[in-house]
View 1 (cartoon, rainbow, N blue to C red):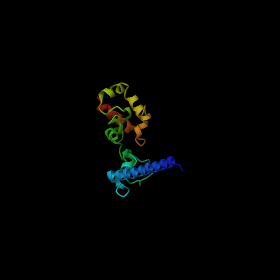
View 2: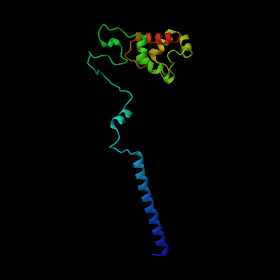
View 3: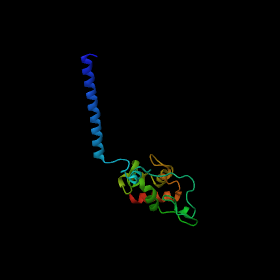
View 4: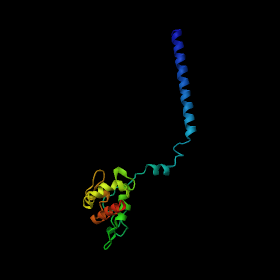
Length: 162
C-alpha cells in the first residue's frame, strides 16, 4: 500500500470516528433537553389529545328507559313526551354551526346575514333546513328531530335575527 493510500485511509477513519462521536454527543444533548422517554410520557394526556371528536353508533345502544341522547328529540324518551322547543333544538344541535358561523352558516342573531334569508320566506327557510343547503346537511345533522322541531328551530333563529 502506498503512502498516499495510508494517509487517505487514516484521514477517512479519523473523519468517520469524529462523525460518530458528534452523533453520540447530539443524541445525548437531545435526550437531556427533552427529558422525555416512553416511561415519562403521561399516557392519559396522550389519550386525551388523540381521542376522536365524536362517535358513530348504529342501532340501539341504550335501554329504552334511558334518557335520550343529546340531539335526539324529547319524544324518544317515552310515550306522551312533548317535542322540544325551537330554542332547545338550536342549543342542542343547530348551535354547533350557527353559534360560530362554521361552514358559512349565518350566526344566530346576525341580522345582516339573516336578512336575505328571511326575505325568502319561512316556507323556503324550513324547506332548506329539512333538505339541507350548501354545507348544511338535511335537518342540520339532527336526523332524529321531528319536522315540527326543525320548523321551531328555524322560527327561533329567525326571531333572533329580527
